[in-house]
Image (spheres, rainbow, N blue to C red):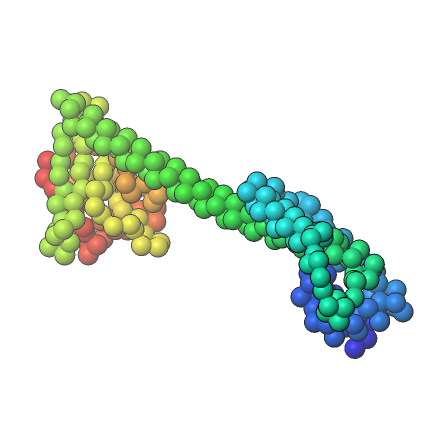
Length: 271
């Protein structure tokens, strides 16, 4: 394996994070001593991990720290206890640990503690990050639902206001034979000739299509305007109609047509 393969193989990342095998570590240390590119890659990986730990560091709970320090203190007390049996067989006395081993023990303990704290900090960061994302999603959902409820309430208030106005004539448009379950309402101001339309339970218009309102005047259809594509759940003002014997709604191409397509007649009602 050449230098570039070592750098991109993931062995360096495994070594830095402590996941490399003893054989991989041994080979990597040998190459590191004689190859500046590998040495530089290891240093950069260590620096990246250290920066990541620093940025995401979060103080662990006090009880976790206390548990770790208590465990380490007990280990140190046990290893350095001054109490020994008064009489021992010379053959059973074990050789004293070398100075190097004694010096390595505190370092190893501190390394273990640091590793535990790092893992706890990373775990806490992941937990709180996921919790924060979940809370934000719930907040957004609640805001959307609240906005939708407010809009529905506003539309109900608009309809109620029209129904209570004595100059408003309400015309119910019932579904024709092909669409018996559909319904719409026309609110016709007989004084100002303004016309308002509510589609009620008409489905959303298919792509390329749009609902168009017609006023039947002396047996002839008169264009009363097309209903906005993005406001199917609202009361919308249409064209002014001075007089009409009935109203009807058809499904036409976007923008409306000069004459209705009676094969696409959805609802109709007499005034």
